[in-house]
Length: 362
Image (cartoon, rainbow, N blue to C red; front, side, top):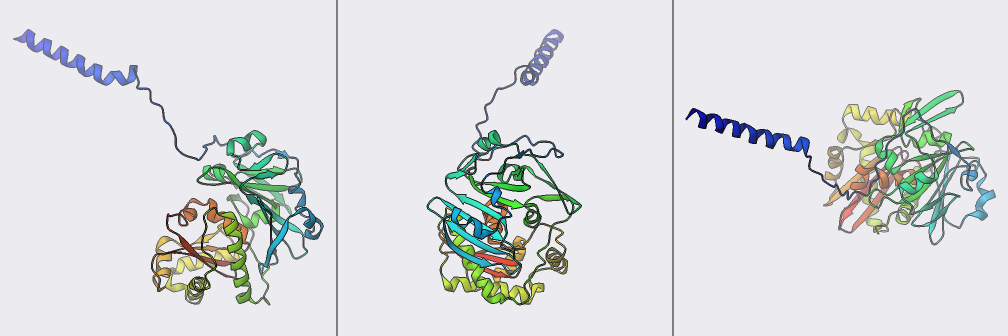
């Protein structure tokens, strides 16, 4: 009997050891077939800066007078005064679109090429993927800028590296390359000088301070400018986004205008005291790149509207329309608010540095 018990215990322990040790000595081989469109990169060290490449035709346009390069661009569709010392222009042909931003002297500080296909400069083309871009240029997770004896340093997140990597040119011009969050394809390249890059603030700034939009035109007719900017944005966004939104409904446009006016008049009904102070700091000191409503704050705003199935996005500062459009397209949180399978109407309103987009599902 003792021998039977001993034999049983030996066999039992042997089976347990075989079961538990099998994964160690004979690991199961599995293949992971990723369905993600996002290309994951091994990020370079934060202190590494990208190599400068030779300025292409568009990088060379930065700093030039817009009147000297008009003949190199297609037909002008629209232009709008931002109210903060800049004028924004939209040019387009069959395949490509061009958004330009000039300062009060008519000098170009920003130029964006966007569309579905077509060559951009010497090395890139719209529709290429991230691996193609890496084969043509070195990208980095860190960008250092020295301007007027001040030093600035941006640090890119993994999300930035996948959707918004940058390129440095040898003429002190920078380009942000925008990849679509769903297709993974390059759909826009945005060229900027250092000064305007600090205003756009596409990445986290770990050294220095974001530039503020302090050149406000105090004589501007803000009501008229708001309507013009909304029209410009809707034209721009309809050419940028593949989805077809209904955007010419004058009745729906009044919904966003009414909601934004209510907020500007009584922000305490939507935001806490701390959040109101945070928004004021964004406008005056620019402690963060941008300010947007939380889900609960937006619900407080939309609940006051007599409409069902309303979603919204509040964004500040919203000075140039191209910057706003790019944030809506590449920021996952903001972009997800635009996506569903229902047809929708966009209602847009601007007021000085603030913008409200309402998505009205039919």
